[in-house]
Length: 282
Image 1 (cartoon, rainbow, N blue to C red):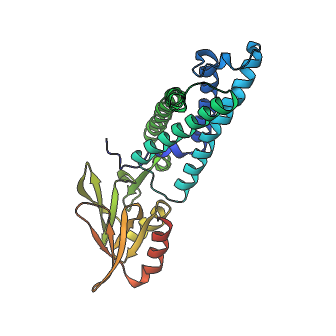
Image 2 (cartoon, rainbow, N blue to C red):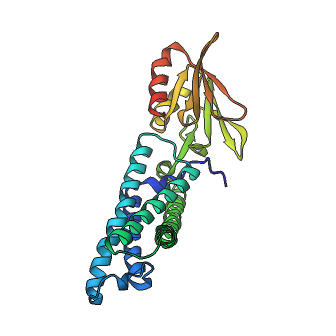
Image 3 (cartoon, rainbow, N blue to C red):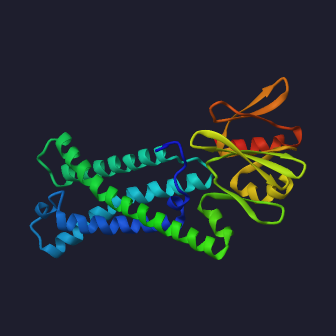
C-alpha cells in the first residue's frame, strides 16, 4: 500500500463524515452497555436504565473528540491540504489516544479507580481502539461500496460528470468524448502543442504519458477547480504535486515532488497565479 497516496475523496465528504460520527456514537453506546469494557456496571449502585443514561453521557462526551477531529480534517481538505493514507492512519491513532486519555482520566479522577494510571490507560486504549476501529472499518467499506456503485451507474448511463467528485479527473477530446480518466493524485502536469495536449501522470511509481487531441485553453476552465493550473503558455501543473518554486538563471521553475524531480517553467504572465496557488497549498 502506498501510504503517500491521497485518501479516497468519499472519506472527506460532509455527509459521509456525519454518517461516520453518528454510526460511531451508536456503536459505542451499544458496545459499552453490552460488553461493558470499562466495567461501567460497577460505577454506581443504580438501575440498569440509570446506568445506560450515565454511561451514554460519558461515551457521547468522548465521541466529541471524533467530532472535533473530523471537522478539522474536513476544513483542512477543503483548503486544499493533501491528506494521505499515512496521514489518515496517524489521525486515527491520535483520536484513539485522545479518547483513551479522556476515559482514563474520568476513571481515575471521577470514579476513583484504584488501578495504576499506566494499567488503566493500557486497558482504555485497547477498548477505545475497538470502539473506533470497528465502525471506521465498516463505514469505509460501506462508503467504498456506494462510491463504486455510483461510478458503475454513471458509466452505464454514460454520465461521466458524476465521476469527477469522486477524486477523478476526466480528459475529453475536442469533440467532448472522454479519452482518459485519472485519480487527481496521479496527475503530474500537462504540456500543450498546437491542437494536442500530452498528459503526464504516475502509474505505480512510473511516469507515463497520454496524447490527447485538445488544447490547454479548452481544458483550463474545467481543471482549475481541481487545482490543475496554467503556469506557462504550454504547461499546466497539478499543484498537489508542487514541491517548491525556484528562481534560476532561466527564470522561475516549478519543481514537482517526484523521483526524479520534474521541472516546469513558469512564465511572467502566470507568475501571480502560480504564487497564489502555491501559498494556498502550504
